Image (cartoon, rainbow, N blue to C red):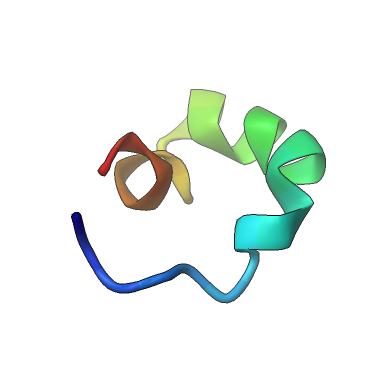
Length: 29
């Protein structure tokens, strides 16, 4: 697992970023 992501608590908001590959790699871990 990678280091905790700063926006880890905002998974709902980052779900859209995940589709863009912005924060996806961080949550994929």
